[in-house]
Length: 177
Image 1 (tube, rainbow, N blue to C red):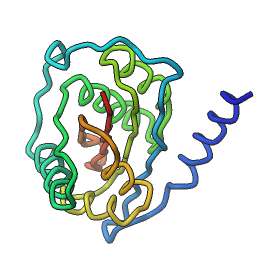
Image 2: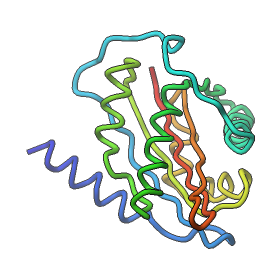
Image 3: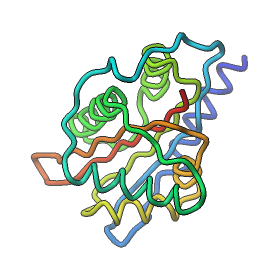
């Protein structure tokens, strides 16, 4: 019963937070944090897949970390495996021409199992032209801002461009290990 309520709440939260939130006429959505029922075994972040970060991804991570440090929070360390999971979701959204959190529970459970994460949260967005634009939009949204300011210590990000229309898709996953 509790699990059904959680999935219903998660779905409602994802749909209710989709809206235009910048002058780029873009959308961004966030999901609540997910915690496992039991703690998964810890795996060293150094053992994860390699990932090549583009300049927009690095700029966005820097904006998030600079903001966190400016308000007295720890900077987040990137984990390539999380960025790979973010990229998979960007590719899914592009292939299906959607902006959503489909399979977030599967993604988060995978990250919990592989990395031993205790909590996972996700911000997504699309059609922002710069790192600053998506970052500013996320800060204006209470749910996105809560994830950026959350009790996390690692993150990953992927920003991919739809080759058909040039629209950028953003997936930013936050974790606490």
